[in-house]
Image 1: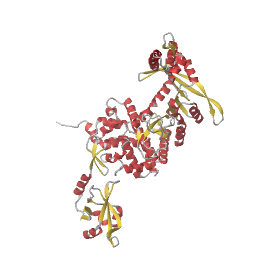
Image 2: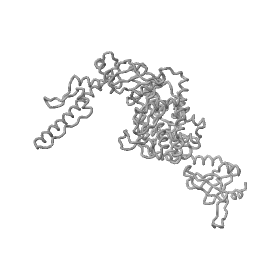
Image 3: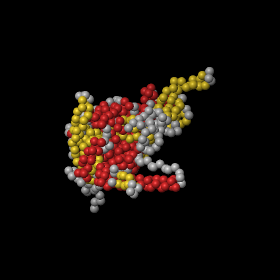
Image 4: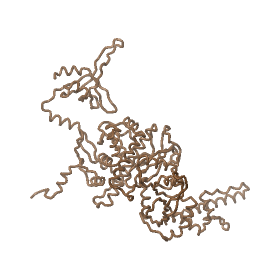
Length: 627
């Protein structure tokens, strides 16, 4: 092609900087003088490509639209050297070395260890597979899929508190989305993550879990056990409908939003979540969560909840649905108090009980089959179903109750002595007598039950020893109720394992830093909460897999988290660096043994991070110095 013709085509060009993609877009135009405004106007403006250099000067990468019109420019090297000034070079006959040098100059030194590990583990999880399924079903585009995946990777690593900093993170970390992501991209992703997409995500997730369960033909012993619990987070926005003043877990006097999560207690998989008003009590949220699980397609499971969800209505709901449950019983009902008084003497000495010892905690357990009367909606009448009460007696709880009772009476007597001194002083000075200090409800209950009494002989509060012993022993009893008959050890372990949901909440509020969400509207609040929960789920599930791996691994194969922290472990993985260009990864640092153990525990092949064939060959006999 004649270069003079090429110069005439690109005679008039200008550039505009794009903050979103962090590059300069190049446009050509036809100048036309306007006599009215006495200015030269740009006519027939056409985008022809872009310049990646930060100053807007450098090689123009032509787009497909321009090359379709002018294919001859595909072989030309066009440089923008100044305002409306370009330089065109003919293609070199031997440019292989130049091409290699330019590729080397364009390559970047990147951190690869942590993001590769997170991406690989995430795509093996149900959340990663569900996200991929949404892309395969064309619910989201490829760009949206890569952006969401990059957002989740960043949230797992750094949390959701400073999502605006993601554009600095991806400059030196390899993530699926190759272009720039900034705060405007995050806002568009939050607009994408509406309630319909989140529901579709959870439904896909449950479909995948059901498929896996059907493949292994899960029996009753493999029935999923779902832990259910709620918490709340602070909100600094007046545009959130559910934000209201309630019992803030943070202790701050700000509006909060309550939400409830459901996780598989074995794998730590997040099954769903619901958000509620800040003043909604936990006890009122169980029915909605169960219906949500049914809508997602989850069935044949046992729900495990703490005593905050114990109520006659909630149990009646679960019996009517036919849902299996394990519930920590709230022992304030008169019938349950009578039940405890009937069994406490035998349990305190271990009669008819089995001993369960775990983590320096000893419990004496016994199972009692009872009947539960409830209103059957289908039959429109009262029916009875078996309910199994698992009573546990913990001597440590009894000792704690005893110390608390002694301290309580001591504080009460100190207050009473101070009252008598004030009374005597008022009598001597002929002043108004002070009012006798009012008792707390707990102290009133102790007086009514006779555990403590006012000793008029010594003018003080004393403890009735016999009743105090029964009171403290009863405080050492805690009860689990279940709709199915299990062994005491099994129901104890299943309830203890529900603690994984508390661990997930700790990750949510500490590592993910979602204890306070600063957002502008309801849509972005729900999207940010969802992102934080997905990140917390990954961290919790990873910790569970590592714990399971360490149970069976040898001493050399065990995984040791750096400083017992997932965040510090990610930082440690970032010592694995590489030269990166156009999906080509050339590692510059070798993987260490502690990293290999972590990859092995998560069933991830670190082939991208090391030359495995060379390493295996080096370990064979016959290598080294030959004499």
